[in-house]
Image (cartoon, rainbow, N blue to C red; front, side, top):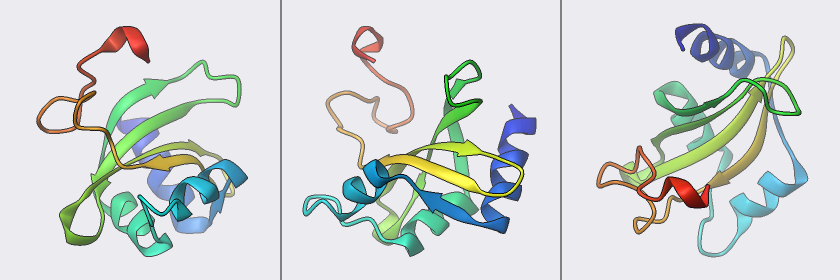
Length: 109
């Protein structure tokens, strides 16, 4: 896990690209996740779920804190040139444990 975490950090230091989907998720009125918040998450995150066999390549669900310490989840894909943000969202408290780090209902992933 530490290898992929390091790769995410190194990719983010080079450049961050957003998919169209992630950009729309960030600007949703009920989310309003700024690029600064994304950088805050990337400065101190935990890997919540690891997807080494994703069709895009090795992707991960990560979680960290944005503004006002609100928890933000990102699915990201690190490359040698950049970090791609696939989606960004505020986790639904009904679907996650009290720390918003583990899904309560793994059957509905």
